[in-house]
Length: 161
Image (tube, rainbow, N blue to C red; front, side, top):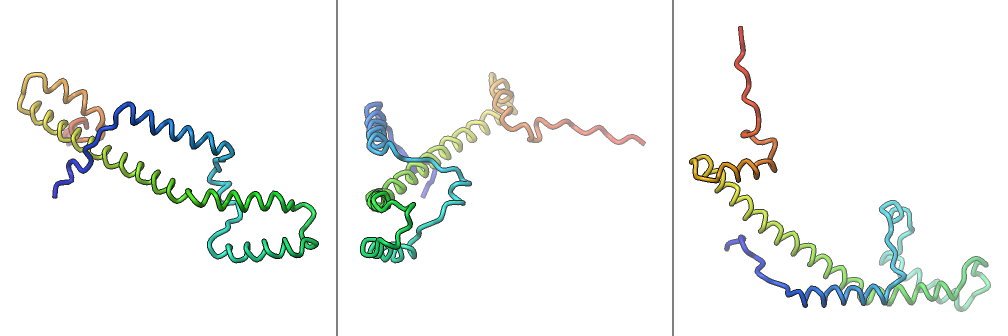
């Protein structure tokens, strides 16, 4: 099975505008989204799958035994956070999957383009080697992308005794 052209698709300008409009609409509904730095991500306490049961117990206890809630904790804000977390989780996985698929597709089509570029470069290099008209100028221009290759390295001086 050939892997030279795994993606063969075209988006119309209208399709691109539709996707961009949908993303703008999503951002419009979620104006409170934040972007954390890598440092902030590391420093924030994490609530993973094992913590869900603990949170559920705390929810019950905070509601039934509010006298133990510290004065700096606002129960109404905690409940808003719990509700928002649950709502975001309803679509976060789908958005993550979509973003990963877009990234993977960009990587694949970029790879296909790059492989075609390299094949063209090799063809031009061979044509220049065979002194085909116009090939040397193209080859000289394209080979600048690969400054460390043999063609651009100086020939060593012979050793003198």
